Image (cartoon, rainbow, N blue to C red; front, side):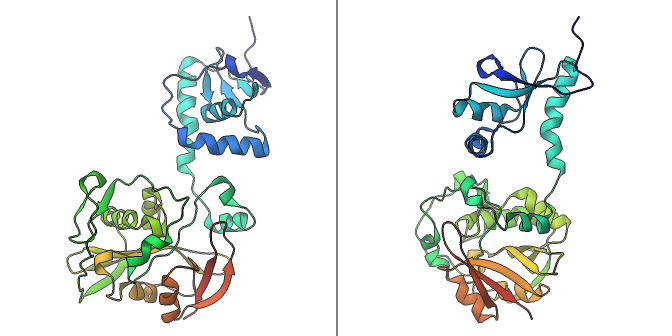
Length: 316
């Protein structure tokens, strides 16, 4: 009887046509295959797949598909023949699930990314700023390579109604601006997330795609503030973090609903934030005029792969 491998890990190279994908794999990673394939070509196949005794994949489905895509004949694997069928099933789920319990340390991440060309892999950690200005030129800010993200809900810029994307029809009519006489700035609450997400998704071409889990985390950590009117309607928001090394507040996204712009909302939001503040904005973005007007100082210009970014700071 073959002794089960319980005390050591042995990496073996298995012919790729001998490996069997798990038919009921609950994880859909199709969108990641091209990125993983590029990573393997750049750095090599550094993380083995894990197979059961019948060569069925337990973990590593995306790496397996990526290896096939680039024509690899064999891939490094670990044969987990010490696990029962129930344990295999549990491990398959646990391996995918545990990553959801981790989070980014943004200060350390910023240091790591300083000399890394993320555009090589088309990663998008950052966002670009929107502001309280006339957004009639927002289409000019889009890039040829931009791919609109899948958006669940949108907010109508004319009436404020929030509904699924399928229920909206794009029409070329001016946005009806609404005057807001009274509004307040406060920390965002869980009940605000739907409205914040709708505003963000409606402006994704300018601020990037904002993930709901990121908003939920920001609410929990009190790093997300909103402007709300007397009825509690969310008019705009700002998502930020404070760097530990120098207490610099870094704005990730700041955005005001289209129909509530020109009410000084963005200016009030920024005034409410602790200083100093740093943000980045594409050099060709009209919002640079806004930041200069309210007292931001242009510190430097960073080189991005697709366009240059102005780095602004506000001390007081």
